[in-house]
Image 1 (cartoon, rainbow, N blue to C red):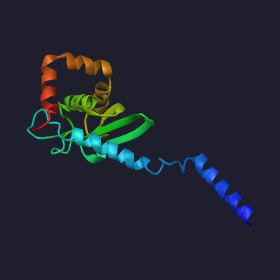
Image 2: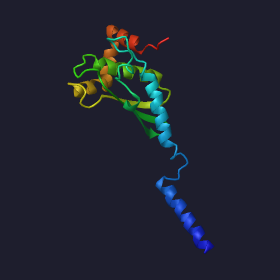
Image 3: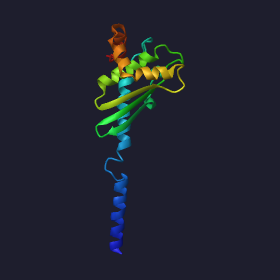
Image 4: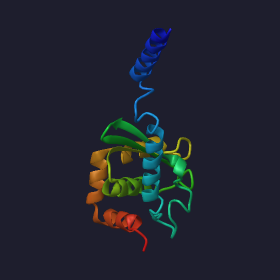
Length: 160
């Protein structure tokens, strides 16, 4: 009987190990993703709105729930931001997306890929804006414009 019990225990541990359920880091994984998401949120919540003297957090353009982090591999993460413009026809939604991208590219302490989207159904031209803010060439071209770059710099400047 003891031999059967030992065989069962060994078999169960192998099944759990092969399925990934007993991996030492498996239980920590959701907590690590939550911590990384909070780290991202702490960086973007202080970004200033281009028009108003308020932060994106104060205007509820971003919230903790708008940030998602997924592990790509052990050293790299996919960061997904879904922000909500204040009005469905916000003319500065692209600029807000650009500010989010610039701030995270500069400040995130871990290797990442970044996807930024307008929350579904919250802007009249969300598809076009989503393409613009996730196109590296368009982002680079926008940041070459001195006037636009100055606005972005003012928005992402850390408060004292």
